[in-house]
Length: 56
Image (cartoon, rainbow, N blue to C red):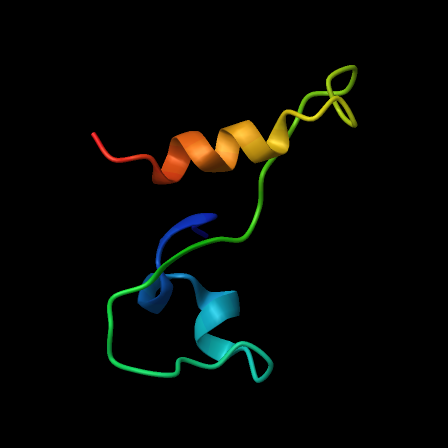
């Protein structure tokens, strides 16, 4: 199972009734981010997401 990738290859997003596509644009999704114990609640998730979507 994929945790990141095009919406069309992530089964939980394909099946979701709550998060439906609104157009035909290629959209990627991130459904799980794992942060090692000891680093949780330290503000690392936002920078990880920003790095994942940054150009280049």
